[in-house]
Length: 318
Image 1 (spheres, rainbow, N blue to C red):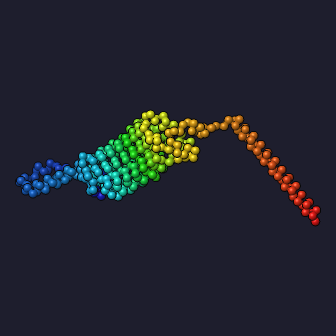
Image 2: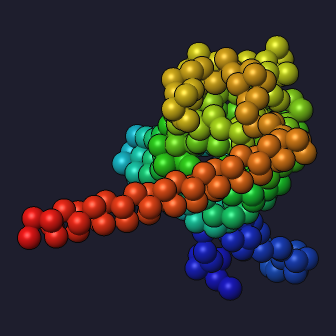
Image 3: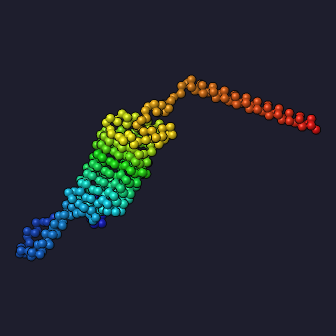
């Protein structure tokens, strides 16, 4: 395959190798000292090949310095196709990027920081971070993400900070979305569209220090009790935006701070009926049915009497 025609992020684009020189050069006759112009051109070409091999070329509209590539605020509609292979910090913030191609990060194994905030991303391709094993900081805030699937952060076990805030269409976080991220310390899920969050999504994060969940339309029903109980037990070790997290439903707790709900608030979720309760309900149902039959019988008799009395009155008048 021609390297120049390989798709973005494919392994064929990751490495460029200079042709090896055999020992036959020593057998060629000495042509004499090279012309200065030829020597200069040769040096420039060699320097260019070395730069290409080292992967230090900088994309158009981006600035590159000390392994930091800044492509922010350039009105980009797509990600730059070629980056220095030793890139550690990549900023694509404040653009109009709607999609990231699969395998885009395959070649950039030194990547530590990826900033994709304030774009138009709806989703990320599966396995995007498979080769970004050193990635520590990921910013996906201010996008249009609608869900966080189970394989979104697959193999990115070095992540320390994830920002998913201000994604207004974010409705669902898969229970295994953050599976294996044992080093994750900061997670921001604030100002999205989340009404529910599974406890399973968070209980596998032993290093979590900061959790931001405010600004979401939380429905504080019975299904939220396990998560709230877990959060209350960790509130001393985990900093949370407790003042901003409020319930949007059900109506009886609307506007209440999420962390103000206690076990008493979910007492109705644990009501159980005993045998006596069932017998009482059955007895009440039987009494109500008998009363209903009796009422209908009396109404029937009353209607029949009224009809006879009306007919008798008409006959007397005649």
